[in-house]
Length: 253
Ligand code: NAD
Image (tube, rainbow, N blue to C red; front, side):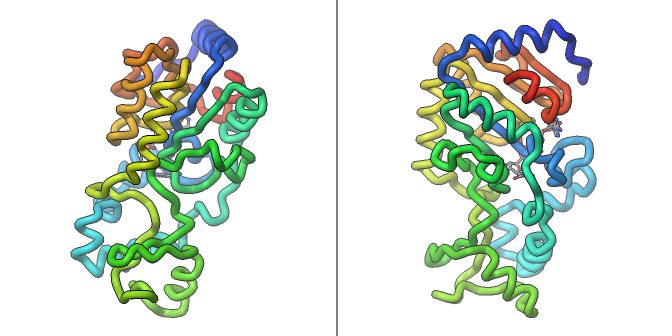
């Protein structure tokens, strides 16, 4: 159930951040809603408003249906992420990193707003890939997304791979698609190593991303969850903050 954060909640969370030495953040779509990119499962989420949109994120549907691919390309050309700017939540994590205590941001986001805000790209672990590249599902050829979007704007409704003619997709992880093993390994190492995991803007319902919280807590890290709605990991958190992230994160750091 949603509730108001009290000064006591915020004070406790601030103390935990202030006393931590090895902080790792785990971020989700909620960090970017104030930048104009809707999440999936929040009150104004894409899937909350249109549950049928979920099939666009399913690998099997993408491979088997030209209609799904065409709809995906239309959605990509008009994606708010091309024009979005980072907000105060992204900038707060930059400040924490510059203070020398935030060592990695494990993000489920594909929008590169952490990097755009000034986070060190080497410290941003893009667990679910990036919308800025395409990848061929046949030969693995990887290119700049803008090249494919130009072809879509020029009339190709489902542009095939230039190298092999195979199916092109954004370089993001869909449901039914395995995560990059090396990227997941880096994320797990960060979760095991940190002494504080700061979760921000994730419903913590997508695995294996959400399980990183359990890994961190199991290895003895303190957990803070900042999310407007309840998550399955709230019970292992030492502090839970429900306020808007563009207020909560700057207040925390
Ligand atoms: P989610 O949609 O499941 O959950 C987002 C959570 O953030 C919700 O619980 C919501 O209540 C909360 N939230 C939204 N705005 C908030 C705000 N301003 N302040 C506080 N809380 C807020 O997102 P998820 O857990 O990241 O999982 C969804 C999947 O969708 C991920 O795999 C991700 O790759 C993808 N996705 C990414 C983007 C992006 O890159 N910006 C956008 C949509 C979806």
